[in-house]
Length: 362
Image (cartoon, rainbow, N blue to C red; front, side, top):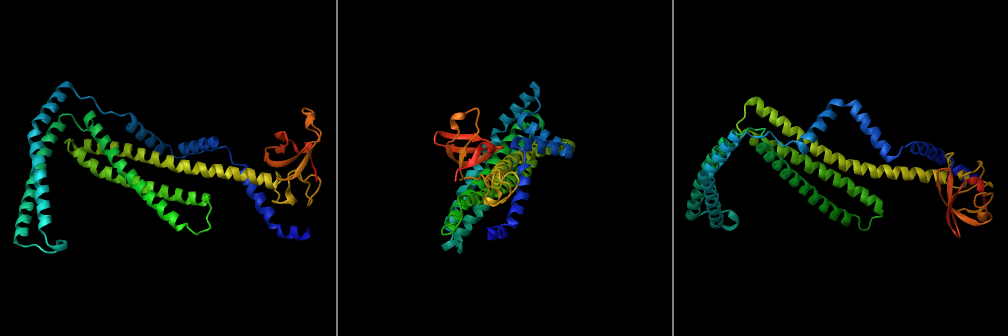
């Protein structure tokens, strides 16, 4: 007994402090509410901008175009079909000449004879024609877009499609990277003494990192491309800056909302594990914060193995029940603690009883 007390002297204090800290943790919903309220009060302006960006992304559809402007827009788009057809032909021609040039090159592409050089010149000429066709097509379409404006329903819809396209690419990168991480982590874990919980937590960290990189990269790509989209509507300087701010705010808010959801889900899982750990410490160490083991059992009076020691796995006898007197005298096993009561497994099933109605049976 004396040896047990000497070895367990430091552990009871650590468990006692940890138990007190974890015991004060509120339920998950309360923690989320408190955290959200704290952020809103501490950072009101960023919180307002974030909510505004989400509202723009989810509900903004752009300004309605007048009937006259809509007709002019449709007319100019229809007239740009000539430039569109020319662009398609130039793209097909450049692709074919590039293929012919690549096939005519020597072994591993290191050699190029006279025929290869001639095909290369044709390919370069086709590229110049393609650039001219792109410029002509851009001007024709841009003239049509100018009639409706950068804040029109057409511009907003085009920007939204661009965002979700880059978002899908970022998400695809994260999924592929996570798949490879899972494969290599599985191979690396072979022969290692690692529990399934530790493996899952380690993989979850990799998933969060991959999605962060993928979605932040997608946001950067969108902001880079959306400026060209804005310029295609030929807005004024002030209009262009305002459009970039609006599109940037909406896209940033959406990406941050998705990342917050992912990190929040991971944090919620860890939080629930911590609360479960708190319950386990209270069960094994008692409400008084004692150590794991006989010296800190539920209901113990501080001795090594006194008559009030009730710990998980201890055989106990039911006594003094007035509401269910038929259980008095039955012998069961303490399973766990739930608040001020204990789960006791009897022959007829599990019951919750107060420590005062239990006594050690051995």
